[in-house]
Amino acid sequence: MRDENCIFCRIANGEIPSATVYEDEWFRVILDMGPASKGHALILPKEHFKDVCDLDEVYASKVLLLGGRIGSAMKKTLGCTGFNLVQNNGESAGQTVFHFHLHVIPRYEDGEVMVAWRPGHAEAEELKEIAKQIKAGL
Ligand code: AMP
Ligand code: ZN
Image (cartoon, rainbow, N blue to C red):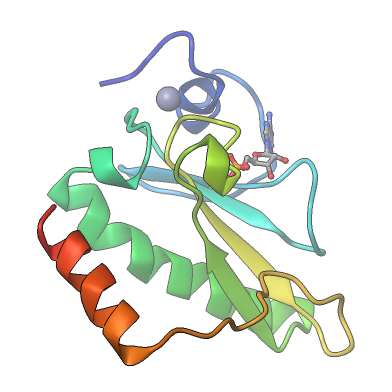
């Protein structure tokens, strides 16, 4: 289902013009208007899903393969040597547009460090306890 008030629904379905990299029956891939690096793209489903928890099986089964395909094309054409697939869910995770999208961010040698965290420390007992908590929600 599409949501007429959602900007990504409108872009994905071609109602608002965009720099389109790829389009098929399910997705439109566009360039991000605030790129983290040259070629930063967004994979947008043509149907409205607010985040990854909302995706259906058809879209979920296709989106990662498409991410790999777009990333490979970037390596061939843009000179990047790697790429990050990033996907934010919820405001606290940095999601600003509440229509599922997968970022494909090309990474260049000597490029800025992105999508990184400082490894913390946890005792084995603590990890066991946290794993138990998460399992209870599955
Ligand atoms: P997120 O923070 O994961 O929700 O990512 C939203 C992304 O969408 C940001 O990187 C924005 O720069 C990008 N964005 C928002 N509006 C547009 C638009 N109209 N066209 C292209 N990119 C957009
Ligand atoms: Zn939408």
